[in-house]
Image (tube, rainbow, N blue to C red; front, side, top):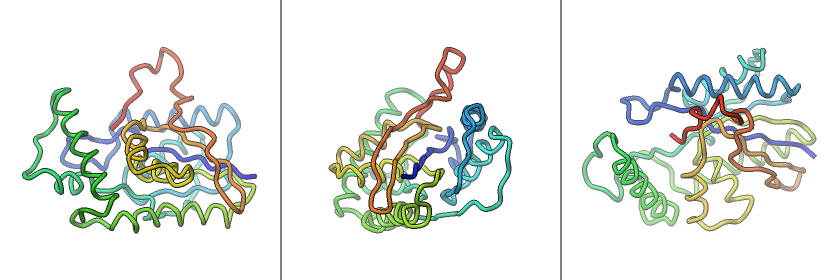
Length: 224
């Protein structure tokens, strides 16, 4: 039986002109995860990442913490995140102001929840995005690849909250509403673990932060 570790990217630049970059804290989260694994002798037989900058930067931080470098990482566009602005635009007219208060953050995520539900149910078509059916296929083909090519191995995937929660929802057969809730609670640099055989994946853990356990890392836990 193999083990698949799915890691959400470190904290990105929410509210900035370019979200797709790790913040300083996001980089430290990734390095710390690599250090945690190095302390436990972790080695991966294969590494697969989405193709966004924050995915690549997170893997680089993990590799730094592990004390290794490798150029055999497999890029997988199907592990890229949905466009949250495009999703929100289907249920909200006009551009949202940059969130700068708890209420504005709550408003942003209420709209995102509504937009995701409409997209997943096929009621909207966010500009520049695939249908949800195609988005799901991008995730499930990655899972198929792992089962078919890496039986008995330890595989690392670095992606985003949307694809990871979609993978969990697919494996567990959850409703769209439950998948959305999983998505909106996933934390930066968190680890989700699947066991897998050539036939199926099985959820072991979801959204864990073992590398940030302890008072020294209380302020390192983030969601965006």
